[in-house]
Image (cartoon, rainbow, N blue to C red; front, side, top):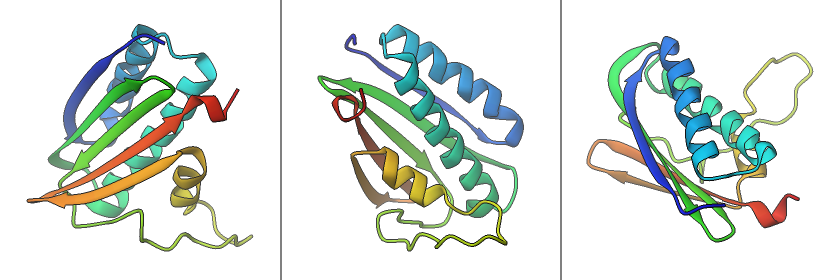
Length: 138
C-alpha cells in the first residue's frame, strides 16, 4: 500500500453515488489497496452517504458531504463530514435483528467492519473518522 491522501466534496444527492464510488475506486487503486479491502470501504461509504441523505436530510440536499481517505501503515482512515443534524454513531444504539424489517443495520455494519470510530461535532458539521486496520482482515 502506498502513502496516499485524497478528498472529495459533493452535494448529498442520490445521483451523486456513482461519482462518489468512482472517486473511491480511483483512490483505492492509487493507494494500491487490495481489492477486498476496497470493497469493504465501498460498502461503508455507500452506507454513510445513503444514511446522510435518508436520515440526516430526509431526502436529497444541496448541503455538502466531504470524504477524505488517508493511508496509514496498516490500513486507512476514512473521514466523513456532513452538515446534517447532529448524529453520533459512537453512542447511537444499533438495531436488533428483526425478521420483519429490511435495512436499518448500517451502524452494526460500520462498527463490525472498522477498527475504530471517532465522532465530533465541529460548528455545523458531523465529522466521523473510521479506521480500517487491514492486518485484521487477510
